[in-house]
Image 1 (spheres, helix red, strand yellow):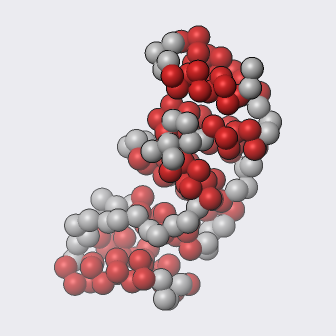
Image 2 (cartoon, one colour):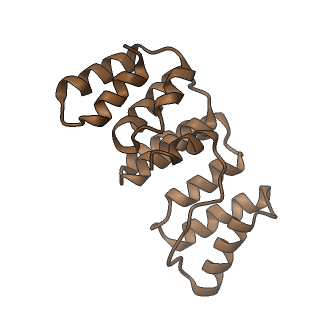
Amino acid sequence: MSLFLTAKKYVEKPSDIDAMTAFMEELAQEKSVEEIKKILPLDFERVAGPALLRLADLLPFDVELMLSIALWYYHFGLDDDAHKYLERAKAVAAVDLRVLQIEIFLSYGNDPDYILSLSQSALSLFPDDEWLLAIKQKIEQTGQLAELNGPPLSLSWQKLLVAAY
């Protein structure tokens, strides 16, 4: 059976342990990035996470993939795992704007001075980034960061997940 059909069967019957086991086993053996891409939009909760992690095995230096995994974990409140994948992205591209933005985004809830420091460091490399400028201005004006919308990213892996969410 193809990975797509196995994943679809699991999505249709998520409480079926046999369907879940078959999906996980087939996914673990899949070596085609293209085949795994096809299943990403099927189910954000059950399929996307394991599929992204399998892709990380196949594409260990894909910064966009690492950031997408970090955001997936963060969405579910798994902050430690999110930071683990952020660190993997930083190891590959420490001064990439997207990496710096996600670092700030995942730091929401920390001390405003810390977030301001991260923003100022990022702005030293990307002085015209409006998202970074807005964060800096909010903290400087109010001394806090009451809310934080995600950065305006255009990650190819996120686009594949949009249909599932």
